Image 1: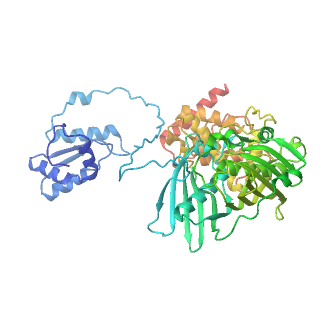
Image 2: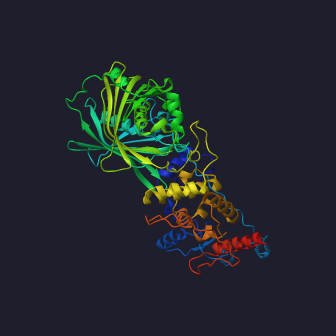
Length: 583
């Protein structure tokens, strides 16, 4: 790079930075060596990539030079080494013939090592350096980027985890999910940054896919697109199968619209027929898999009548004071009130029906920073879907002044909660006291998968397999690529048996020792295991679960094309292990 011989003292950080940024003077130095009567060049590498360039320089200066490699890709190592050694010998290079003729020690293949693939970023705020993208304190949006190519398109990117908006206290079916109320806050915050001073309502909010929050967090991107008078906000998150949209909504200017008249809270309370304290209500919800920690237990008092409910809300002290347009804890508590009229007699003590929200028609925030409120919810049947309900929620201050309203909340009625990917615990089938069950069962897994839409089943089974792979290679499940062979993660023949044991326990099926090699990727394994469980991934009718057959004493058929020798050996060893187990 410098054109000079260095003694090593100058190889500091500055040198290596220049080494990355400055051109390499390779041709210049080869020509210099040729000028000093160097005629033999040996490249020490797994495969020669520089020797052709050396030959070109030698031809350019019309000098006869010899170039030899140490190794060549896909060729016998010892043959290449001995051939190059002979070439060097006939060219006059001193060679220790006795050393070369002495047989070497037998090589031993070392076990594969699963690379941890950890990233370590420097936290730096100087201009021109990378910045952290974790959501700022008291706000959810990360750093804003405006597109120079598509005017009117704005991006925010940040890392969210269970500490973001105290989401760790929002657990659905044993999984920490980002509350839907957070999507409302993201939309309002994005609108405020792009058009400060122009109040908007969030309309047509759709919860497209639950956003699971693992302990290590995940990257989220918010995109606001302006097109004339129409503005759309979308929230994206990466998945092993690619980036997906988890929520979207439109922003509608409020203009001169006002909040309406105050609400007669005393009159509403007077017509309620049943009452329950907040702590008991949360115990009832926990029995349905809706576990709310302290940050999301905003209901202090609850009353209901036929198709309506009224609740006294209080933002928990642990999350007060944050600078939100609408506090996620407050809005989520208001949406929790919707469930009260749906629980039925004895507040749902006689059934286990579950409910999940799918979207909100319109959210309007009239006032901010009201920590003590009333929330009134009215619920009606959906006129186009017999398993859905629509609800309107109005939140007022203690004296009845409007604070916010959520109109057209869509609630889906389910026989049981689905199992979400990247779970923090097993499905919640405990009683009203909130106790947890022992853990998932194969039957509950199959039922949960069949309850999902066909396109969601594939992702769910992929995630279940990825979790088992992650346990074996000791990596986060989110870092398992479903489309690459598991061998690329360092799984060898011994680890493949461990993975087989995990999958057998997880899916309740018997697997051949060669299954990991016959279905090399997570995606391949997921399709195979779904078939074993009689869970169709293409939307077809479910079959009865396949009864596992006894392990065959005959070797599994192995294709005779496209398989490397190492793979064949691994399969033979796996079959041998299976036969030994059967003795």
